[in-house]
Length: 344
View 1 (cartoon, rainbow, N blue to C red):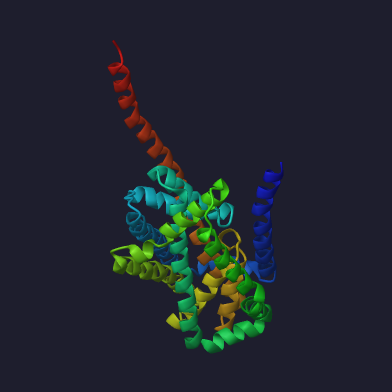
View 2: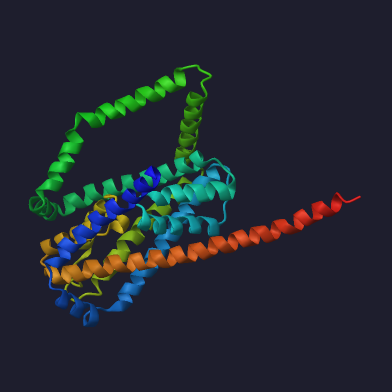
């Protein structure tokens, strides 16, 4: 009962937060004008192009992850990896961050390998994304400093929260504690099964995490990383050309939108619903785009990617079911052959 309640809260609390922010934003806008824009002012060919670029980003992520898993001695098929990536994003629409756990479980069972090693590879995958976001944010911050300053002036609580996090002593105390604990863990000689289990998990996590450093084709890994983030940027950038109010905005404005949207996705809300719209609408306002046009843009640019994720999630569900059916069909003749062999 407690587990059911906890899982329900994990689903409902982020959803309520996201829906609340979304409702607060759009309750202040003119919905009639937004529907007029959606109905008659959008060039949907750019929108479909954005969806296609979004699909390419997921496939590129699967190719990049395959490089890491090959370093671990595994060679999963692209079908398995695309199922894992597509399913990850679909799962995250239900429970934030659940997708990463699901894809580790799916691939570890499919490849019959350690869950924690797969999890370690996912950690390095996500760490690469985090470093990419930080790097892009710093570069674009200096290129578009007036825009970011104006954004922080309008939303001072964001700046305060970020500053409090960076200057909090608990952040550094926690980091030091973790380091000391790991050093103690591996220096202590014990036969305690729980300690040994934790040591094994840490070793597997590091083994999986270390794949980026150990892989032979590092240039491919960085190529796919650039390709992934280029696709992420382009799927938002091409949407600007679909709206009369945003088609005049240049690449720097698109980069500012992209970074603010990427940062907002760090808030654990299903699909970024609410925080992403807030970041995009507020940033577009700094470039002189009207609030209703900005609201229509955020609604469509976010909505098409959610539709894409749902379509890919449905595809993954059928693909995995068909995959299981094929495996069972291959195993059945082998079982029948064994039964025949044991007959006198």
